[in-house]
Amino acid sequence: MKTTTTTTLLLSLLAAVPYASAHGFVSQVVVNGQTYQGNTPGGSTDASPIRQISTISPVKGATNKDMFCGADAQVASVVASADPGSKVTFTWSGGAGQNWPHNTGPLVTYMGACEGTTCDKYTATDTKWFKIDEMGKEANDPSTWVQQEIMDRGTYTVTLPSDLAPGDYLIRHEIIALHLAMTMGGAEFYPSCTQVRITGNGNAAPAQTVSFPGAYSDSDPGIYDPNVYDPGSLYAFPGPSLSNLVKGDTGTVDGQAGSTASVGGSGDASGGAAPTATAGDAQPSASSGSQPSSGGGNAAADPGASKCSLKSRANTTQGNLNANYPRHFSRVMKRLLNDFQSAAHQW
Image (tube, rainbow, N blue to C red; front, side, top):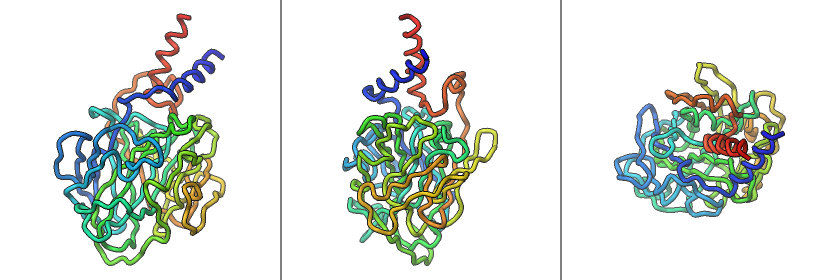
């Protein structure tokens, strides 16, 4: 009873307490096997295809202009060459080179053409985005989000559409951190844009596109979620359905011990997930594309799916912290819970 009461009080306190240190950014991307380093937010600028942002702090509010590519994102000097169907791997880091600090909420990836010019000269903000990937909870463990693997120093890989028309594109890869999503406006957005040049002779075009800001609303079920810490709750992805360009199998999670767990992703519900609702082919409103899902946390909007996977990097020791509390508690929450419980013992 005491532990339950303490946890409930802690979750209420967290909704009102910001933690500037518990943020991060995309620090590296691998495109077609070529590794590119990202620039530290607000630091010096070196050649990279990752658009540099000004701060590791999250974008707050679904209508914020920084939903486009991140806080004050600057056009990058490099456009990375990518074959249709090639893999793009993202590495997320916390501030000061620490691990990514959160583990609650989805990872979502979009693409949009740099129309009229090359991406290193593209300054427009009216890009037409189409969704190529989304990952939520693990199919075989509804109490754990795939984002936990990022917190454990995992990397996230997305396979680009195989028949995408050639040209320059932005890849908008984001983490939506939901550890404060019990309160309207509490969600934290971490969008990042990488500039790529698609080669080949594909001719496919997306049938459905959205804008950022505009694709999400703060009241969308996948952004405002009072039940986010309920392991059995269904998760509804915000934004549109997966693009008609998405084809392939579901992704996999590569664990610390080399085990592989299936996860429902990129529009294919796996792990026995129930059928999901979709928005069809209509242009979505801010919430019409939301897709409820079960344990796997990923909806079946299209018959196929682009491949995505998580792979662990060398991990740092968490001590007994992860053993004492559920995995869906973030590092910040665990630290606060320790402090809060220590204080409670003195009452």
